[in-house]
Image 1 (cartoon, rainbow, N blue to C red):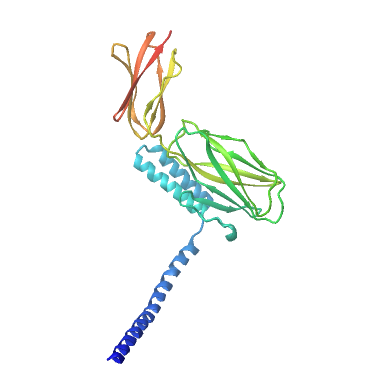
Image 2 (cartoon, rainbow, N blue to C red; image 1 turned 120 degrees about the horizontal axis):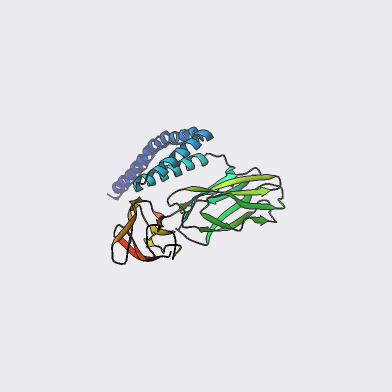
Length: 307
């Protein structure tokens, strides 16, 4: 009985092994069928013509500027970022200098004329924020020594303030990584959810190369009605307010008896900071109230006309 049990056990083991062995070629065939499809896609990927790319980018930005629908704007922004990624991801790089991307902060590695890899992330800034750090790491894989390397912002939107104006690297060793840091302040008139470019240029002797960083300002997280400026005023003053999302806004001016004097705003406006101009030509000297309302938010402040 024991010998029969042993024989049955050996038979079961051999059957299991033969089953696994028989299944292996099928899996291999499946793998072989799948892999060429990925490789063929990779081989067919090519960067689009620069003129076509720029035309497509300009068209998307025009669509973004012409619509105030929040969902459409988000969709267009995603299309812009996808177009940029598809174009820049095709730039040939040195396989030995490629840096793996981080999901939280996607990195872009590009090979320069000195065989140096420049790694730059995309940045999202909080609305009206200060002391934001923008870092760029330069990896020099060339065999020659660079005595002096200068990094400076050469093209950026008017709503971002950068310091210092430039950074000088006096000792740049071949094969070494050097990180430079610029401090950015975001002005309140910056457009939100609108990707724009910050260009950092690296100068090394007679050679220079530029790299583009994607920058974008997030919408504010609160409503706020600001004090008009100047105040007191004559004849005009500016009333500004902050919106965390697109929506209908009304701004009205009242006298101290509660009578409506004028309506400055009654329209749908985009997130960010907005403003309206009050002209006091038809108003008498005195104290007035102005009220801003959007959704469930409303606030009232005083202004003074002095003639």
